[in-house]
Image 1 (cartoon, rainbow, N blue to C red):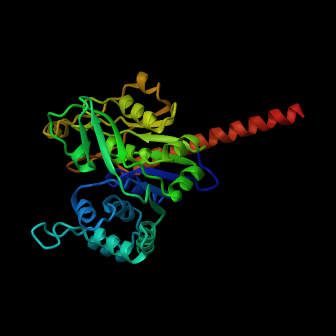
Image 2: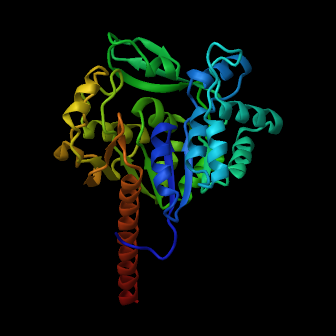
Length: 344
């Protein structure tokens, strides 16, 4: 890997589960980290707090905050408490302690970003966590038959018989958190994924000004492809299908990098996923080349009862792509300077 003299600034755009895996790998690599987090979850504790009190969803924010927290024993104890979920039969009805704390801080501060920053300080974060928007909206999906679904959890857990997703959109339209735009515009790399395509990654690009910022920034644009398809969202998708959708919603011609997994999924794991109607994502290189300038195909998966990305391997892949692109730009800048010097 190319080693740079200064710390690269990396922005990770996504949800809670996927982003947290990458963030845990990157936080020890000496990079400037910002996690931009989707704010349109409608299920679980987040959905209950939104429905009853009008709070924005905190679940994905909580996961990213925890992923970037300090590794001390004290922080570990606090993380255990923050991740505790009350029994649904109790009066606290399945709420998560971390979500409740963010709700309390939001009420006290009258500002979601301020509440996130307060908890970040408590956890001694390595990096920043930024809600993609500070406004409320529903994630909606139009299906191929013209029918509509409203709510992230409805799309995420939809019934088997429903047709494929044609498009997703936000209702109402919402503006971006300015801190998210600033982070994207000043980044060395903008990383999208891993995570559910239509309910974790693309919703960020639907927020006003986010897709245009991703298009306009000089940062290296990277997409991390999922390991498995998801029934009801990406049935039958190959790697190129994932990247093509990112390009479509980002309104951008091509990405700089697509990162895909080459490690074979063991047969017993494949069988276990048959019940979920999920299959390993196939790398279809010729078509993938249509949507990304460079492909990084490396072993990235790990298995702990589930198929997951390995945090350290994933971080190494992102850093390699970032530094290779930075080095190429530096060479190009030097060559341009030499041309102007010779012309003078």
